[in-house]
Image (tube, rainbow, N blue to C red; front, side):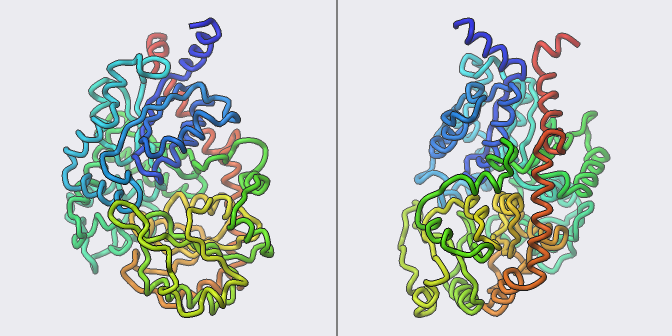
Length: 511
């Protein structure tokens, strides 16, 4: 090792060495990448555990990006997901079934795959000495046992918002009281400083009529592990959920069995590029040139005139629902950019790219002058930040939600699963930046063309939509301040880094 290399290693060790361990699905990995970049900039040595099917994306951001001045502080450890097709589309559902059917089997399988124990036992495999803590996903509760085995701390990076964290931490109490699994028609569940949660707004795993009852036990187990964590880092912003955070922290203090109850740090939004450099995220994205059919089309549209429609990578919409949506879009007269997921078979191979039989006859021809139906992956954040985009029809996945808010785009909320119904409640009832279109959650109810058209017109062409646009722009400014020096998220991150530094052997011995 040269003197210069020794100096760089010393700089890394000043912040300690941590193992960063996301759940191996793209939506969970996404917030872990900017989080790791931020830690590395504070001199923390990172070992980032990465599935091989996501390696190229992670490498681009953490290892190969020359603008990332702390990339030497990051090392990648890879593993393979033992399912054909990886964790894309249908195969992700396969892994969920494996997880839910037997938590213990899942823990052992993932522990063997990830090799966290190996890295901690043999620190020569690690970046900058033995780890002082594990920072893992909310769905990797088994890492709590791994951390305890090696007498280090496990922190959870919770990829969802605080209100969902509150629900998860209340699950043991609700389970003991017989309130979950819930049934349709049962009384709403109550968590501090959040509207009552009716059964239809609960994650499907917490409903007694779920097709996969093991999922209830899986999430309940993860909740028990969260109570044991050294701290809870959340992909949210204090200014968005202040009263919810305060209520949850009180609940944790009052109900924890530990003499050091886990603390909540909001460190989001964990959106790549946010808070880096002098430009706002919206300005930065608009200055970054993007090419391709979608941007060729968007560049020709007037400012704030396009409705962007995308339901993420998992949600599947029925043919009849697509027809109803198409009728509404055509009748509304609005410009639109519609990303449609191509149906795939059990191993993730596209079945067909022909939607002509699904749309109303002549729809594509009649709307081609003002709309684009796009059957490919689309760079969503760049699209949302484009000057032509006025509104977003979203499934309310948290990554999509926080991206839209961060660049100042109001939404039509059409939640599908998981915590998305609760996210829609936050957007609609608490923040006033969205119109919730389905009131019972998921795709259980067919949304008629009339209902969807009314929501489109409200968001795109009426004073109520103007008010939502103004409100979300104000929130985007609060978010920019939160991630800058002195802001709430930046201050929380610095506080966490200081705690990590105190875990290093040198810091402990100096006490």
